[in-house]
Image (cartoon, rainbow, N blue to C red; front, side):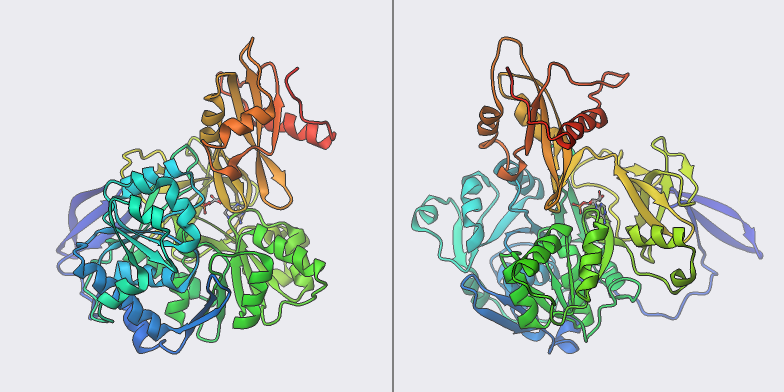
Length: 582
Ligand code: AMP
């Protein structure tokens, strides 16, 4: 919201003050202010693709297909195929702003959709196949998906909700074929991806799109039951990609070879594909597999110099290296690691292999990496305490975004490295709203409340200490505790339940459930797990169950999750066996 205040004369001219409540910034806009001589033009995917075609065409994307055959495409080919996709969708009558969903791995075809769908003035909706079928149906209806691009590896998942997408009118299969029984049962047209591309022209005459329009729609894991939609604009995608290319971030350039070991359905693959296309950095896409031997084969085949991914990916790779007695990572020199707290032991283990691990912090809502732990020059001569704090920190906020600390009532706290509060953030690639939600509880004076607790020091280093968000982050993906509790509570024998995050060496966090049974009813952990199987994603199943007579509560009667978690951790530390009802 903006308040326009017609203000006082300044230097004898009438100036107009615009006080923007979102930003608390005063923009001065006046007819007499000297206009710049600069041209204007929308930032976004069409501009990026024109640059790719005319400057970065020789850079390339490499991957392995489902049969483990190597695929290599130049960026010029990629841009032409993206053009075919956009033009084929247009010819088939998908209008401006039509939403095209994807359910696919990190493949060159998925990347073509990343480019061709938004650059042709449609919206790409990347769907997370790890969501439960009910959640996918919910987000596909909210997004209004009219077509869906599904790869062969995700057909099993697609089958779970195929009949529940009323708005869908085209299914595109990558690396098919579509099983006959499935094809016969679908109420909409299906087509092979390559056949669809053959219908289009390799256009490069992309339309002019207002840079504030949505390019890509991504849903958060959600800390309540339902994922929430974040629409990235053409402008925000462009600015975030530029930020990744800067030296204080990933320093991507035309000599880099980037391996984003991240799913493309999670925060636009952290925005990394766009940054690589902008920089002309070669890209290695892991396809359907993030397994250590496959990642290693990709690093070796593509000569990757820089990789990015969540801690679980890198701890699994480390275990594989140790098991196979391999002591180097070839050409790889740097890993950007984030999405969850990066253990110092992991950073040290990679340092011993000659690979620098940079911790990064960000959220779906902030278009991913918003702070990164590049070390400034002065750290070498700083005192030990400062050095230690910076080494363990999530990083410094990138230029273009701003971060601050506030207590939970919103009162600002000093950035002194000691005052712990909620980290708030704002900027041109931070979301303002969620798709279709009026609720503004995520904002405080226009700043996004991240739900992360921590400190910021005088040099801008963010150090997280805890989370206000009621969720579990397992292997980089969210398990919303409230939704899991609801599914457990729907069992007739369950009176009450609390789900909390338990530390896990491989997945960082796994869910633990503490259950109160209704008197006179019986159910053990095995029975409750069986109950959950058709109701939630399999990887949500609690790792540990405890049964108690009553849950601890706070003074206002809410379940005291901190207390529940402490009780569970005490039992785990004491190596006590999980309880079962007597
Ligand atoms: P998502 O929206 O799924 O990307 O999750 C974003 C959340 O992941 C953040 O708000 C943090 O809670 C967590 N997160 C991301 N990076 C880090 C990090 N380096 N250390 C600790 N937590 C992190």
